[in-house]
Length: 222
Image 1 (cartoon, rainbow, N blue to C red):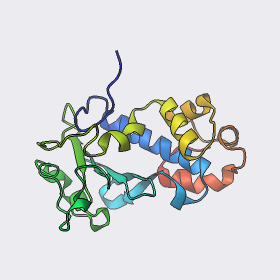
Image 2: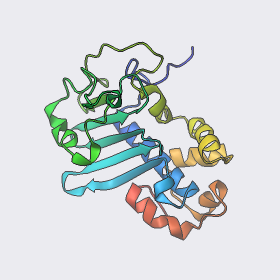
Image 3: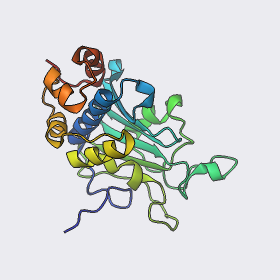
Image 4: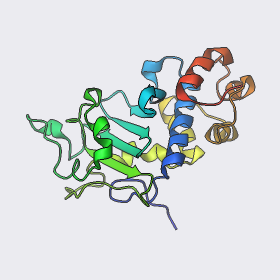
């Protein structure tokens, strides 16, 4: 049976919190290996975003105004995404009003994330959360407009399915490179970063130049 894409209309394919954090660290490490310049990377991860609170932050920016931020903290995880061209974007209104229901019913445990000015809460087309005791991911009660992907969540969350081949396809389109699937799988499995693994993924990258990035991401390195 064909697996349904991850979206706010079907969150069953979104991995559990721990698995999702592992995936976001992996794709951030892969982007670091493929792209020396941080500002041109698609995925990133900061393992010490708020060290005092134990908060880690995954993010995606496509360079065209679309993005997501994922906060991993003691209580669980929350995802805020923004697709500036989808039917539910506030950019179509002068007041930048978030679509009704998107920010409704969010547990108070995630208030610090929502109050972070850097995330520009008005730039939100979808929001998803899960506490560790929850059995599934949740989003607010939304009356979706017509369209295949009205809030952009299906497009922006597609890389989070945990399938290494998904990243291989992404890298082919975004970085215009053909990657060794087995090497990508090793990164998804969090095999320690080595000079050999780096070479198999990008022969032009030097292992020593990636040690600091691995530490920032919280990815294991030899």
